[in-house]
Image (cartoon, rainbow, N blue to C red; front, side):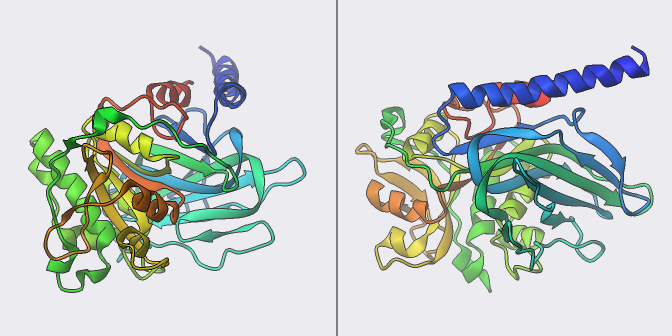
Length: 375
């Protein structure tokens, strides 16, 4: 294929991908949230960065299936010491486009390159709140941009990129429960953040540590079992001054060979049940006060959903306790607490895992894989 033909072919297939997204917007009920994932990046425009050792990948314009006003951008990369990534997102309206907001600066070695969220990005269109871009008005389209750089000729390898979109005004009817998950508990190792000096604020890395330990046992891969302080060091956000940046936690987990990890929004406890029924535990971001019934908060916390009782109440590995990490909470209380984060989850699993059917385009699925990898 000559160069001109190759360019035309890529342009046509990028159009096919965008048409797929547009068509799905007509036929699908997204229930106010949409997940878009990329495993290959041949449809992205490649250009030089500001630094001589940088490569910039810019997506084609993506037409969303919902009027979105929030986006969480997740990534998995093989980023050895000395390399770095910059992740950006732009909303596109009919009459203008926003700036490219920086969604994160990522490096495995922050002593050489920054690993931090970016402060003071608020303008007339929106603001980045640590790991989430919040718009003042919903948009229908978006662009993504990733800068890959490093010392000398070193560059990271981007393995996966996802955008979790949310229409925060959407109203959703409850889904019928998936009773196949009732009475089932996944044996995820129990770990307490309180067991470590300074661990009182380590709920997120403890959650990641538990999920990695589970897959370490299942896959017989000892290198995945990482102690909580090691995870906390690997996800620390210098500008947030802590370890609670959602996408830094999933980027850390997704840096391991063969693992997929990202933050996304679900719409109902029934979707948690779908994962538990498949034997896949899920990290949940929620309000701890609401979960325990001691107030309305806000008090952000991360836990692992490991199962459901015979009556459909969720079984949780709660890292915020010194003893009895595994607890059961009422379904209603979990729903109220989880709504605090607008139903944000950490999904961490092997790349070849058999995932539950994605009825509403809320996570990586066979359909989203095919759409995202078309060339």
